[in-house]
Structure formats: structure tokens, C-alpha cells
Image (tube, rainbow, N blue to C red):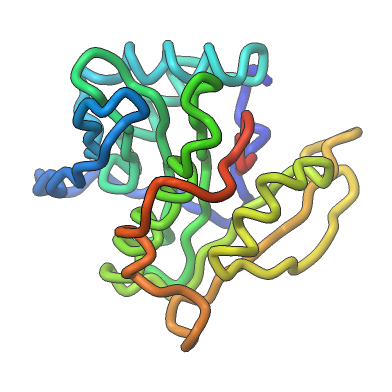
Length: 208
């Protein structure tokens, strides 16, 4: 895709505000034992983020200018997995100004780092931070055939809301899923400290 077919009608562009404090990094461990940081993105990181996005999503990667705009709008909700030499995954969300709803705009783990539970850790940390910010609910879309990603989201408390044919145009069918962050028993912040195992995503755009 070369434009913005993954954005959701009704998710407004926000007006840039005053400088924001960069969230503290969360430390994990990579498959080779090296420290792996889950941290916020800076402006200088955009070329490396674009490289990772192209390696994972190929023709469906976001154009650089789109990533630039997402950074300007939602930098507080854009996190990467960084081992100090390269990025190996990222998660991006976009929240409405009234914080009633947030959409997951992207979730990705490099192919060589899949199967380690890193996709789960990225999503769990993003959900933890959104919950702490008072966001009411989180929505996402996923390709119906991507059962691996659907199982991951269900395990994190998401439920299927609808199957929409041609959601992103012809042959762009999607399953819509949602998670109320304020509901009891759906999501637990301590999940972020579990071991790096369990289901992971595979080339998941989480297509907003």
C-alpha cells in the first residue's frame, strides 16, 4: 500500500502540543542474551524505523512520510525494540483526543526474532501504558487469515467485534477486535513481566 488505507475514519489528526516527556525504557532480553530495550522513538530513529518496516512488510510498508506524520501525531505511543545496534520490532497506537478509544496502527517483529514472545511483550506494554493514561478501550483490525495474530490478541483479552468485507477496499477484508481497558479480568498489567515465550505475531500490520 502506498497511501493511508489502514487509518480509521473518525480518528482525528491531533494538533501538536507542547514538548512531551519521553517515557522511560523497559528492559528485556534478546535471543542472544543481549539487553533489549523497549523504548520510545525519537526523530533521529525514523530512518531505522522505516528500514525495519520495509523489511517486514515489503510492498505494504508505510511510506516514510506516513511514518513521519505518525511520529508527529502519536510519538508518545510509538515504541521500538532496540538492542543498541538495530530495531527488531515496533508497536504504534493512535488515541482520540478525549481518550475514549485508541487504535493499534501497527505491530511488527522482525522475522528472525519471531517465536520469542516479543510481539506479546510489545502489545502488553502498549496496553499497560494506554491503560495508565486513562484510555477507555483499544481497537484493532487484522486479516481474517492471520490466525496466529488473532490468537495473540484473544490471549490479551481482545474480543472479535465484527468481520467486515472490503473494509480497506476490494479484497481488504478485516476482523475488528476490541479490548475495554477498564473492564475487570480482561487485561492485567503484570503480564508484561512474564517470560519471553508464547504466541507471537507474523508480519502483522494490525492494519489500521
